[in-house]
Structure formats: structure tokens, C-alpha cells
Length: 99
Length: 387
Image 1 (cartoon, helix red, strand yellow):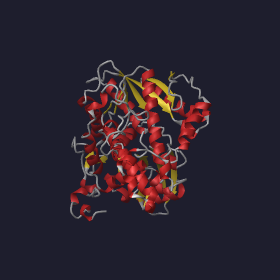
Image 2 (cartoon, helix red, strand yellow; image 1 turned 90 degrees about the vertical axis):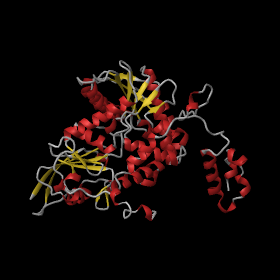
Image 3 (cartoon, helix red, strand yellow; image 1 turned 30 degrees about the vertical axis):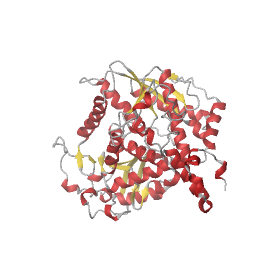
Image 4 (cartoon, one colour; image 1 turned 180 degrees about the vertical axis):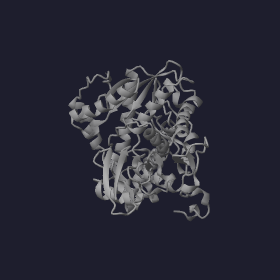
């Protein structure tokens, strides 16, 4: 199964992924259902150009980074256990860099 | 960490993950499905949430009776998410039919490229990107100045023409000054002071007696704890309060101070606002880079597990009051931060505490307790500290 996803990074998080705010990705999950947990590892291995510890802490996002799936707070969707669907839009916003 | 604060004693303070199947409707309108979760368990739909943020902004302005109709106010725009959200909130307030905001915002952007000695062409490009965005989306006049040349404030008319030139000498001077400060915490605070001065000078040049800055509740809480660690007790009321009246002519206001960073970030995303965050000296650095960074990591990390953390710290900031003696004629103020001087107060001030720490930690076993008498604690003699 291939997942087509739009990943957005903002609020300073884009500095971790080559300053690119939007990433359209196709992921081959080899038939498995992917949860956000799996996506985080994928991002760490494929998109994070530097300092993975600024994005991930242990197995989840660092405190201060918000995750939205299709404009919904991931806390309402089960956080790491949310099962990703094709064409999902996932946004990672850092609230730490201020403005 | 003291075991008395462990969750066994106060389980209701610990964040419990929400059970997705248990949430059905927005807490406010009770009709639409929720899309945000605030403060651990309050769920709201998009419309109710956005309205609430706007209300919080209006309420903060209203309860302090901050503005008069027709007044010009300088909006300090950094390019980051909070600044952009502030502009959007202002635009919404000004264009609303009901209880329209009647003052006149004017945008000021201060370019900080000098800190990293960025290539001038790159700086112009960065600036133009931000100014074009504002000109395209907001009905406000836009001005720009730079950290190293705070007297030069240039208006941007949105036509691509930017009459801004960087004087290499001034840029280098600022860059060297910052580089010469070895300690990162001091560097950060120095830059903050320079930035504040630049914004004040800019506001004066464009004839505004008031400035809005985009500090949110989370930042205020971090500023509060950091300020205590840095020995800034005397200034804290002005730095974390709604009003900052350290400058006699121009007042700084913080209308977003009641909005937590999470809510502001969500506001920015839902309204599809663009932000252009520029790296600062602390960006991408580890926690131990500076006192501020460490405090930030501590508070934000704690907030994750205990959702009442930031609001508790924040409520403390509300209780701080500025020293009334501030406005007395002839009372000198600090050149860097405009705070009231407090270094010659007899009884125990922050400077004495710093002196004490410096002497004790640098002498170590060679410490002669005679050195710790009050005469030497008041006297700043650096040579005596050499081992």
C-alpha cells in the first residue's frame, strides 16, 4: 500500500527539514497499517537533515511541537496510535520559536 | 525531584491521554465535532476556538483600557507566527462590524541579519519576502529598520522598491560587540536589549506612542522564570506585565499575553497564515546553551505531563507590580534595559548575590572569608578575582 501524504512544517520546525515547509511524500508501507508512531520514525530517517533530537524525544515529538492531522489536534485522534489514511495532511508546528 | 510532587499524591494534576471515542462534541457550541484539545481535556470546534482566541485578545485590550480611538500604534513584527497572528487579529478587529477597533496599527519590522553577518543581498531578500506578505494581506503601513542602524526607518510601499542600505561599519560593529560577549545567556540578553531599543527608536520615528509586541502567555511564563534566574527581579513587572513603561515617552503593550503558545500556533494554522521565522543565536542549540533555553525546555517539558504548569507560573506574573518610584525625576535608569538602577541599595541586592557567587566559585578552596565582607561585595574589582 502506498500512502500519499502532505507533511507541513512550520513555526521554526521547517529549519530541521531543509527549510522546506511542505513535503509531499509517497510511502510504501508494505501492506502494514501505519500509525503516527511509524511516520515519526520515517521522518527521522528520511527528512530530518540535522539534530533529530530537536524533533523527536524518545519515541514521540519533542514537547512544544504540535501535531495536527487534517486540521484536527492529534490528541483527539489517539496521538501516536492514530492510523494514517491515504491523502492525510499532517502538520508539525513548533511553538517554541516564538515570533 | 522531590517525591512529594509525584503524581501519586495529586493524580488530577497529571495529564491523562484523551480517549478518542469519548469525545463527541465541542464544549462550547455542543454541536460540531471538536478539532482542538486545550488544557488537557477541553475540546472545541474550529469556529468556537478561533472566536475564543479573538475574544481573549479583545478582552486583554479592553480590561486594561489600553487604547484610545484614532491612536497610532506600532506593531513590532518579527516575521514569526505570533507576530503574524497579531496582525491578523488586528485586521479582524478593525474590519469587524461589531465593536470595531478604532486605533491605527502601523507595522515595524526590524531586520536582525547583523547578528549572523548575513550577506546583504540575502538580507534584502528575507526582508522583502516578509514585507511583501504583509503588504499583500494586511491593510497597514509597513516600515522596516535594522538592529545596527536603528535611526534609519524606511517605509515599504509594496511596489518592490526597498530603499534600505546596510552600512558595513555599523553591521560589523554590532556583530563584533555580540561576538565579544562570551557567555551565551549574556549574549541573548544583550540582543534582547538592543532589539527593544531599536523598536522603541523606530516607533518614535514613525510617531507612535505605543507599541504592541507579540509575546504570548507561554513566552511570558518562560520570561518570568528566566528573569528570576538572571537576577532581573527589579525589572520583571515591566518585562512580563501587560504594560512596559520603562521608556517615559513610549509604552510597550503585550496584547497577546493571555493566549498560550499552542492556541496561537493553532490560530495561525487554521487561518492559513504564513510565518517567516528567522533563526536566532539559540536556534538549534542544546538546552544548556543558555539560562533561557534551559528554562524553556524545563517548563515546556513539565507542561507536557502537568498541563497546569504554565498557567500557574503565568498567574504569578500577573501579581507583579512595577515600582512606583520609577517615575521620580532624576532617578537614573540602566543604559541597556531602561530599568531603575538598583546597584547602590544597601541591603542585599542581586548584584551582591552575583558578586558573592563569583568570589566563592572562583576562589574555591583559596577563599578567605574576609573577602566576603559587605565592602568587598559592593565593590566590583575584577582583578581581585584572579587566582
